[in-house]
Length: 367
Ligand code: XIL
Image (cartoon, rainbow, N blue to C red; front, side, top):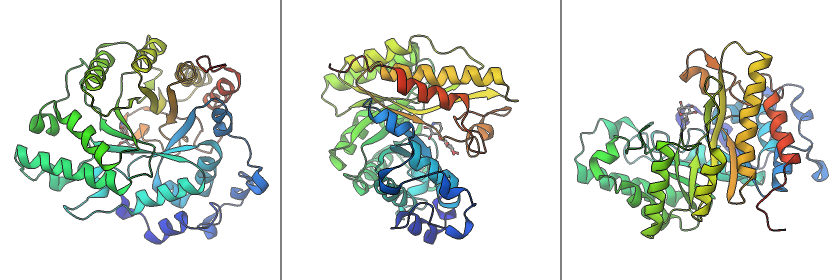
């Protein structure tokens, strides 16, 4: 992935140039009009509204789009105060060959974020997907896999030490029934791999907030029960875990998950943070007004569940424009899952987010 990105473009992006000046020759004429940063007069975006609520509002960032598309950059800067690398911090991206580390694209994102006063959420250290083939095809024994994983967590979390607010240390550890997902890590290390990874990450970056992250844990159910049992046990054992990441990949083909507010509250009642880490709401195509209205309602209800709990600290969308969303490529026949359409027009979902941030009192805030 990162190999496909032009290194000079990454450097320009991360350097001292303004977002719209980087790669200026390829900019569409409208690009400079959408962001007004003069004299602090940045046009209001979700980030300004959310900051007053004590909530970070983020997006996953597609690095190729960030490098190539000035309109994309402008929206990232205007709307969000938190960013997550959609792909460039994954293991296959940072260590494509064994021992050859490549943090160029991820570093460019971190520098871009700092320049635009955004925090960065790290995604992800331990997962079963997007692993490098040298690892999956290597025929390693259990003990060697453990030491490979430990080294990876130390190297990557250590590389970004002090620069990220949070890490999705373990991603998607559960099956739908709440059992531990059958992965290369479970098979080699046993269920203790979660605890091991959190301890290694804490050692490498003591200040980062350490999360366990999964999907289909929005509402009450067997999978969120398993997450609850896991983090309860980890806390009791003194394992460094600070937050639960609720991905938030929803579809309007299903009912809105039941018990989201209660579910968020049971985690925050443990003293943990909750972050909505990857919100998108896909729909069967074609798009209709009715579907957009249901989608807006789903985005809104997830956000309001966050706003209801002071320790629900962050709400991140998994891409903000249908132009680059992962959904059509992964769910055939579905799409239009983000708050902006493919031409960067605000959809009802965007307006719902804006209104929720404007209206909703932060109920758990001390008066
Ligand atoms: C997805 C990216 O969006 C795609 O570009 C990539 O091809 C596959 O991964 N859960 C996660 C994310 O934790 O890392 C996934 O991101 C989406 C599902």
